[in-house]
Image (cartoon, rainbow, N blue to C red; front, side, top):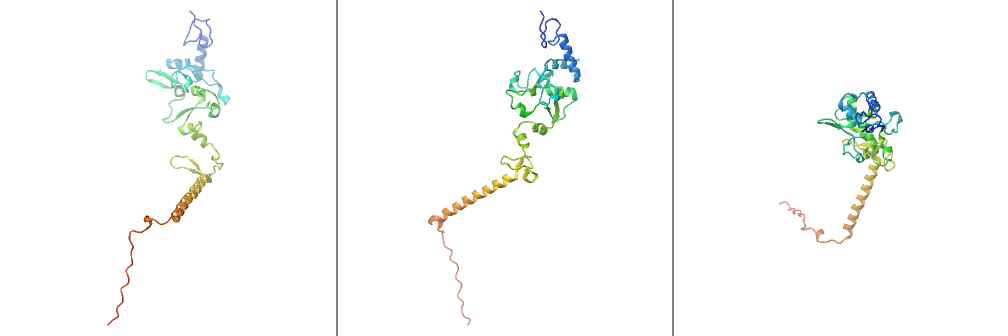
Length: 243
């Protein structure tokens, strides 16, 4: 019984390697050599068998098509859960697929750094329905190593969106004179808005204090307003005439 090739679907050639016919398997090997994957090793062959090299072309077409991971993901085998590709290279050796391929081609990832997808553009992916396919991309040409702050700056998180704004929510421009940077959190604040908030607070505080003073002045004196005792000053001692 001849099984169909997982790539081209042919049943003419009975030989199958990793579910592919001989021509398709040789194409996979050639693709792996182009990115310097050691395909002679079992982990490299297993990795390539789980890659779809005909993925979508990103916004920057010069990067070429994405290579989509078709194996397990970090949130299970269901890829609709928006997880990253997950690869088990060997016993006790599991890692994210995009991190594994980057290390396989470029060496160890520096401690504390993230592997970011250059093919991911948050303002475009946010308009698409369903999960972002770029999380599954394992094309080494689409990957770059960034610090956590740089990786977050390229994302669509609320902090990254606010950091990219040229003016605050009330229309004040973020100039050096109108920008306050929190010394600990590093967050950006509008000085004009802070001054307006302070003025509103002082105005409201004055109204409250003024209302309280008016209420105290308008009410009749009660027991609480009478002192508990009177302090009578000492009368000066009468001066006697000298004898």
